[in-house]
Image (cartoon, rainbow, N blue to C red; front, side, top):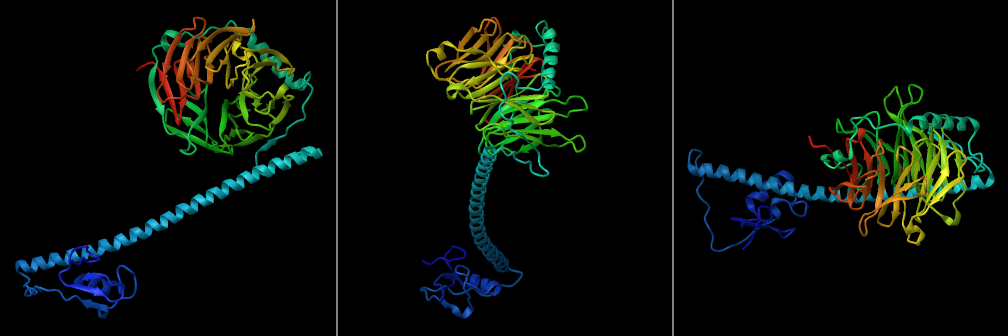
Length: 514
């Protein structure tokens, strides 16, 4: 039995193409030749004379021509419509196949172009680093590109007894005097969430699918103190986003990092003189700063810090709100001026190749703490740059290796939350320089981020087992939220009435049930 190459059905009047050898229904192939003049399968030129009738036996005689008013006439009209539909379907199949081939080629070409661009960017970054090394060895300073953001110069390492100018020291001392007089006696507002309130927190919202799907993942979050519901996030895609939860809209997307963003921070506007700043640190060894342009309402690059030779792991705005502190895996920390966009100080490398994995600044601005990849916590005097204390947990003293990725001061300035073991979270009493309490999070559970609330009553942690919260002093666990799985960042909302956590590409919010 033969099958028509166009309709796929047994032909009533079969013919064979002498050029391609395909079998067709005569009426279908004749219509196709009249419209296209080619073989429908091979695309070669085809004429009616190239068709050879198939001699089949027995033979069915053709019906008599029907009249236009009879049922056979209707059947004939339906047959013509069917033939037209079959021809059109066949043409569409050919076009679809051709389109699929073109799309596959375009996708392969786009992938190849992306790989070339990525390779060129790596080569560019390597060339920049090599140029910077050559300039440093020759005693030359790199120049800022015209029309770009300010490249903050990496100042020579200064002596630890005078890292800052008198003007900067005056700023730090004035801030310390103003804050220390009220901070220790300050009480949490009456509408501030209490431990009993947090224990009743449930899921109240999710901001899904932030940043790119490849490489996927949000890595850091910072909430706006002046605009509740607005937050800054950094991702594995190297992008920084400002998002407004109330309108469920991305306010701005900022690109500049060649690798994942490790930390983000918001510096709210200082009156009319200094606009809001968005700050980020990345695995590409850079810290970037964007400022709000009052005229356009858009964020534009303000400065780039190329101070460190390793991944920047810590970023914090000093209580003066005009200084920025950074920590790096190169074993140094640095301070930059957010007003002049200049690097002010970079510490000497840590002893024995120690690497800094996290950073926090004391609420009154006099101390700076650094987490390390060996498990120790180093406390430095912010003004002099000298080492004030070294905090060693029992696990660290026993030689157990673990990383301290994040630290958080209580607002009273006496307590510090940080990892104290491979699967432990501890609270340090800075007055006695010992651990006031530790929590065993469970075998294999790591702490990625930790945050004290503004009232120094609550502690939250983002762990590989989800988000957890405890009460200060009583040390009772208030909640363990596992929605979304592993959490990498955590922050308290306004008046601690909500708790925000990062899981995968989502930002999750817990609070009082409506």
